[in-house]
Image 1 (cartoon, one colour):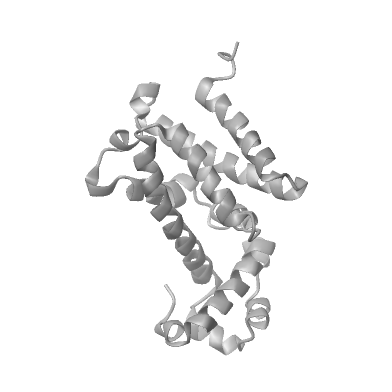
Image 2 (cartoon, helix red, strand yellow):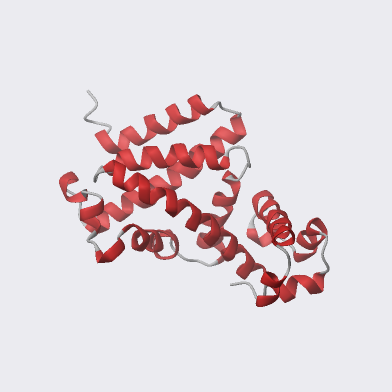
Length: 207
C-alpha cells in the first residue's frame, strides 16, 4: 500500500504520478524499470517517490491491484449474466478488457506482471493472481461450482483452476498479438473466440 503522504497530495498529482508509473511498467519488464525514469516522467523528485512508496515492487503491486479491483466490479455483473456458463463469462470479459485497455495500450502491463510473478518472484499464477480472483468471484462463501458450473464439464476443482490459468495466458497472448499485428477489434475478438472454442469444444471433437 502507498504511504499516507501519497494520499495527502492532490488527486490530479496522484493520477499523473500513477500514469507515469503505468507507462514505465507497460514499456519495460519489471527488472528494467527504474525509479529515476518514473520520477522524471512524473516530474517529482526521487525523494518524493520514497515518501509515497517503499520501493518499485510495492508500487507495481498497487497498480495491478487497482486494475484488478476495477475489473472485478464489472466481472461480478458478467457472472450474474453468465448464469454459471464460464465460457460465456470469459468471452464477455474479453470484450470488456478489449474496450478498457486497447486504447490505453495496457496489454503489455498484464504481460509484464505475469512475467514479474513467474520470473522475478518465482511464484505461480494460481497462488498470486488466480487465487485472489476466485475469492472475489465466490462472495458470501459460495462454492466455486455454484458460480461456474465446472462439474457439468466433468472437471475437478484443480482441473478447472488449470483451465482458468490457461485462459488467462491465452487472453494476454491474444491481446499482445493484436497489439503487435495491429489487428482490428473484430479480428482480435474472432481470434480469441476461435482459440477459446478449442478448449470449450475440444480439438478432436470438432468433426
